[in-house]
Amino acid sequence: MASILRAQGYHVETAEDGQQAVDAVGKGGVDLVLLDILMPRLSGLEACRLIKSMTSESFLPVILVTVKTDSQSRIEGLRFGADDYVIKPFDETELCARVEAMLRIKRLHDQVVDAKRRLEEASEHDALTGVYNYRHLHNRLTVEFKRAERQQDTLACALLDIDGLQDINERSGQSAGDAALCQIAELIRQCVRESDVVARFGGDEFVIIMPGTHFAGSLAAAERLLREAQVRRPALPCAFSIGISFYPSRDVRTKDALLRSADAALFQAKQQGGSRVCVFQQQGHIYAPTLARPDTALPTLLEGSTDSGRSSRGAPR
Image 1 (cartoon, rainbow, N blue to C red):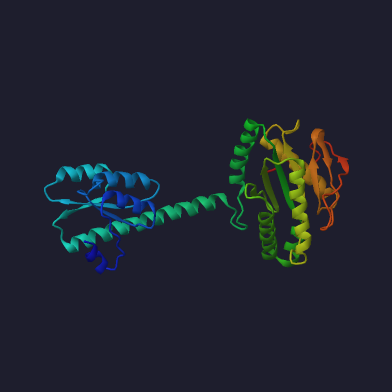
Image 2: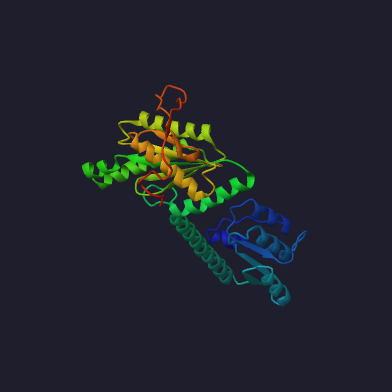
């Protein structure tokens, strides 16, 4: 059987018993398995059951090889998950046809799985920048907020707005503005932790969700972003402002309040001229750190204040 399939151009590996076959599948790289029902150590039926349980999240075709009179084994094999069977003595043409048919089904199955994966990714990612979209942000923020509540942990939210994006669009066209958005998105991805969540929040806004992070860590992340933007000029055609809020806080008891508070801090950063970070504190107070030079340590905090709900930009979308 192996020589027949090799003559058809297939790469074939053989196993002396059922356990060797199971072990070979476990190593990966197998597209199809032919199992004789009668094998030492581990029968073909038991090997089929184990292989199917190992590959339950994918599709690995299994063809059983049995004698013509052994109908009970064929029925049992199909119940164990076998996809087809070949009867001994077998016809070479039929063997090759059944193998090709199973491989064709596997290719189609893999294509469907890949297409589904790409659709799921597209439904959660912003088409322009490649970061997560609002749908994923909403779902992930719900999960992270509940986790922070349950574990009594901290959660920081940074809302970032590009300064002067409209000017770029009017001066150089929509394509230039889109390019700036993509550059900012890539900068954010490079500066945050793997555990942080980056999403596009609106036309020129991004959100960074930072689990397990409070004042110092989130301020350091924002400072790192602003410094990197300075370093990349003039290749980076625009700057940005950042508003930060935290959980737990007396004014932040829901995920929506977390976003609203970050939005209020961002509004204050824009009001102060942009290209800076402001931090929402309790009772509507906003702290505005002085923007440090790239070669300095974290900035000194200067206190300002704003009435809660002062932002004319409204609640986050």
